[in-house]
Image (cartoon, rainbow, N blue to C red; front, side):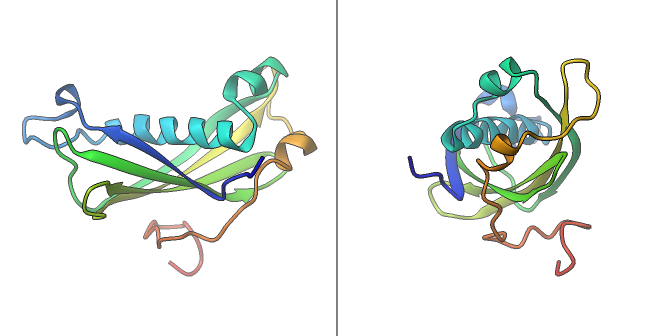
Length: 151
């Protein structure tokens, strides 16, 4: 199995996700990030369901999103997802959300997850889980405060 370094997931903005201004509500982006991360994990060989069956929980500890241009009703949004860092207790993902039809960059994001055990105590990522992920350099500058030293 070839493990992707950057995965792509498509979502379509539905009417219920838009606000009174006709743009995708800002909190919906967090749902889209979760969808993309879940798919990225699956492509790497580790579904959330499989990880949780072993007692491992991945809890969001940090989120940063930079909104650049609005997504609107019926737009197709491509979410590129990749692993930025893998530590002993934390995995950090990067994201680029783009208009699927014209390539406009809509948003960038970073999400860090901590490893927890069944009792929800901080834990270490098992070596076999850490080995599934290949951190890569950001394919697009995230433009997020604290994202990296060079941004």
